[in-house]
Each structure stands twice: as structure tokens, then as C-alpha cells.
Image 1 (cartoon, rainbow, N blue to C red):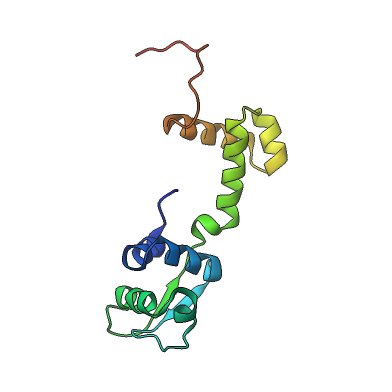
Image 2: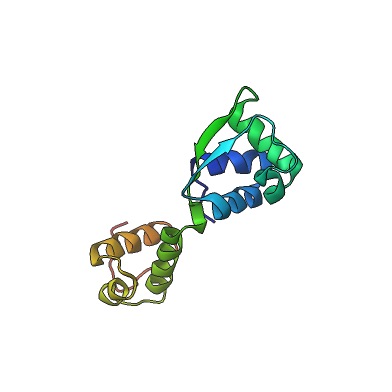
Length: 133
């Protein structure tokens, strides 16, 4: 899995990746109010559990006062899902043009994504190409 962005990484650090992903799925793309200590019926307690919610609130507010936080979509967002679909098509060996038409990506973005996947070692090496190393 890809690393979680910003606040989600902080949440995962104190409450676990599952809690961070649940929060991203429930409130991603919005701003949330984080109290220093959540009440028992607070949405965060209902979503991830009281102990985890307290840990998250303590981490994000330092126990001092409430804070508003922008929650990113993370891997639950539409862009991440689209990128995953593009990656799948690239790994299957589809052409840049086919991928661009099927997904709405530009051919240039497909090339950049293919280069990134190759750099990460997620694509098989093309044996037709010469190696300079």
C-alpha cells in the first residue's frame, strides 16, 4: 500500500492504519472538528472506537484545544482508484492510447505513470532494450 498523506499518517501512527482509512473513507475531502477529548457519542468514537478516537484527538490537538483539520481522501479517493486502474492497464501491457481513452488520463500522464512503475520495479524489464549499465 502507498504511504498515507499528511494527517492520515499521523492518525495511523497513533490509532493504526485501519482507523486512518476509515476516517478517510467517512470524511475524506472535508474539514473536521477535532475536540481535545471526544465525548462518548462523538462520530469519531462511533467510527473507530473510544480508545483510538482519544489517541487521535490527543495527537491532533495536543490536548490543548479544538482544531479543524482538512482530511485528505488518501487511497480511498477517486483519484487513487483511477490511478490504480491506470496501473493495472499498464501492467497488462495496454497501449498509451487505449489507456488514455479508457480512463480519461492523457497519453503523457500514462507515459509518466509507466516510467514511475518501471522505476519502482513493478513492470517487467523489456528485454528488447539495450542496457547501458
